[in-house]
Length: 165
View 1: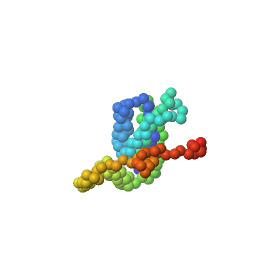
View 2: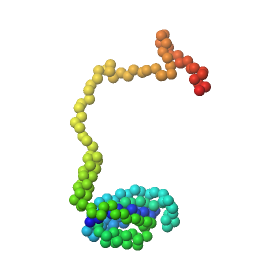
View 3: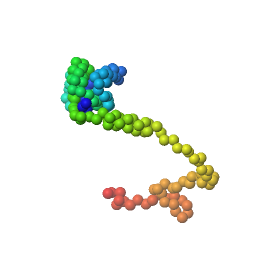
View 4: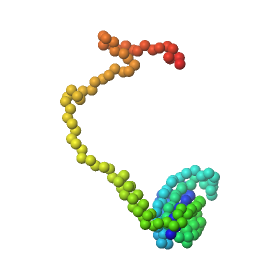
């Protein structure tokens, strides 16, 4: 089995509700033809280098899957017929993909995603009690003023030459 990547540019005017069944259909097509669906990486709406079908923008999606040449032919046929697709391109990533290794990578990625999603809960120690004198906040004078020996705040002298520079 070979590993493929297909980049699809879809009409950006489609809503998520209209795009979702389209990509579900592609996933069913891959799994129905004894393929392995690996990833659907949606890049979002981006500006095109040139207009395609009078559209200056397109919604980019990358499909990563394993399958045979017949599967790729059928997928490209479906993409060619569908009016929602502006452009597509399929690239062979690995001519002899190891399905077991790919399945392990998918499982590992899912485990890592779960670990990132779950917050780490540590037992919180009770807050340390402070004495009332530690809770007092002392105010410092602003940095631009200087405290004189009499306790009065006077503005700091400004050097005229440094102001001109």
